[in-house]
Each structure stands twice: as structure tokens, then as C-alpha cells.
Image (cartoon, rainbow, N blue to C red):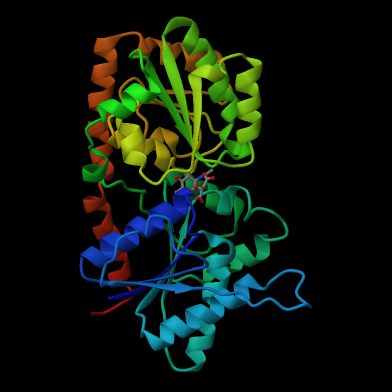
Length: 374
Ligand code: GMT
């Protein structure tokens, strides 16, 4: 099959998921065409079945706002026609679903039918898409997609709650390549971060307000009172400076490292003991799943799709948003008991196998096969 994938090429979960999906499809012999404004971050290896088409937005003195969506739709048309695509799979509704609709209509005029599948990832529905400015276009273009998928049952329900959706939404949960994340810790690396055998607590995100990174700092402050530990912050974004300032204010900055955006998540996760995800909302929480696949238990909030992946008392714990005391108590409980920590690590890795890439890719292929006869 010749498949076009449109996504955000950044470190965000939707881009990571779409890129990993494309790579896995290419490994299975499909021809995959990525259409994005930048090379996706996880698209580092050469694969003869993968093509990358950059969307270039022309600048012009009249354009206060460069027309990205128009450029994207035009690039889609070019790739659909010149590479004879069978199907277009867009990740994140805004503006990918509406650009895909436009491209579909344009190629239809040229006698080519192209099925469009839209995968909803979270903030495209719960934050951005709901905004009055976007809602009519988002609703329309989702409804015009030939198939809609959501990455969790929670997101499926949220979408029906917030938009007038006229067709079924299939849930295809996010996945993880368990083999890739099953890595042995690099001892020298661990010693650099935790020279005296301290426990390593980790948080990874894009540091948007929705992640509540301040809660991570407060939880870690409480952990430190009971367990020698270090905190690793991975990623970057608007709240990073706030979190750094808070660490200084609480006088725990020597125990905290901000390592910025990282591509080799599996190496960092391999030396971690506990993952904290304090978000106000997560449609899924791919970062938490990657942690679990690396045998790292997760303390998370109990919102969105997180209860669909983190199992209370088995792979970690789930608490209400903002329940710093509760999350600290559970974190200390795991970190201060070697046997418990060991068991939770085993459980986390075992549970992550339910989301293995090898089980989920066939679900996408089955969906594609509903529209493409090969
Ligand atoms: O979490 C973010 O801010 C990034 C965002 C994205 O669109 O890349 O992540 C969303 O999609 C991920 C992949 O499906 C999910 O794992 C995240 O939970 C979801 N984020 C939110 O719902 C806040």
C-alpha cells in the first residue's frame, strides 16, 4: 500500500506515534510518505520504503500569517497524484484534517479517490479543537474523514461529548516498541546522575501548563525528605523556567537536572526508577507507556486515558489532579521498599506488552484494508 502520513514532526506524542507507525508500516513493506514541515524527530534511519516531503510555506510581504494549511493541502495533492497514494492518514485534527479534506476534493476533480483517515490525539479535541475559532472546521473535517480513530476510549468519548460527530470513532490505542525500550541501564550514566546510588525519578513532557510540572517539583521535594533521590526533567517548553525557579526557591536545585529534549529516551528511562506524570489531562500518556516498557513504574493523575494504561497498585498509582500529598506518599512507598519497587518494575514492563507495536500495527492495517483493495 502507498500511504501518506501527515503529522507534527516534533517531540510531541502525536508526532512520535505517527512516525513510529510509519516506520513500522515501511518495515512491513508498505511505501510510506511523510508530509510535514520538518523531518520528524524520530525519523533518523534510512529506509528504502520511506519518503519525506517537506511542506514549504512561501513568504510574501502581504502575508502576516503564512498560509500553512494551503501549502500543506497543495503538497498533499502533489504527493497523492505523483506517488499514486492509496490512502492519507492524518494525525492531529488541526489543521491536518481540514487540509486533507481540501486535498481530497482537489484530486477528486482529477478523477482520483483518496480515502482519508484522521487520528485524534488529545489536545486537538480537548483544547484546540473545542475553541470556538476552530470548532466548525474541526467538526466538519472530522466528519468528512472516511474513518476516525482515537488513541483511547476516553478520547473517543470526549470527542462525542464535544463535537457533533456523525460516524463511529474506532479506538486504536497508542503503542510502544517493547523491544526498543527493553534496555540494560548504562552504569556509568547512572553514576553520573546519581553518584551515591540515589533513586532516579523522571518526568518527560513538553512543559506545557497542562502538565503541571510544578507538582512534579513539589512531589520530589517530599520524596527527598524520605529517600535519597535525583530528579531528571526531560523535554522543554513554556513552563521549564518556572520549574527551574521553583527548584531554586525550594533549595533542591542540586538534586534536579533539566536535560532538555532527548531522542534516546530509552537510555534515560533505563536508569530511572519512577516516572511522574502529573497532567491535568492526557488522552493517553505515551510517555508513561514508554516508561512502563522500560520497567519504570508510573505515578500519574487519574484523568483522561491514563487509567487505561496505568494500573492502580500494579504498574504504579493514580491520584487526583493536584493531589501532591497522595502522589508523594505513593512515590515514597515504592521508592523506599526495594521488594515493592522490583515487583512494580516487573509489572510495568509486563503490562506494557499489551500495547506492543506488533499487536497494534495490524489494527491500523485492517482499518486501511477497509478502504483500499490491494
Ligand atoms: O501532550 C502533549 O502536549 C502533546 C500531545 C500531542 O498531540 O502530541 O500529546 C497528545 O497525544 C499523545 C499521543 O497520542 C498522547 O499520548 C497524549 O496524552 C496527548 N496529550 C494530551 O492529551 C494532553
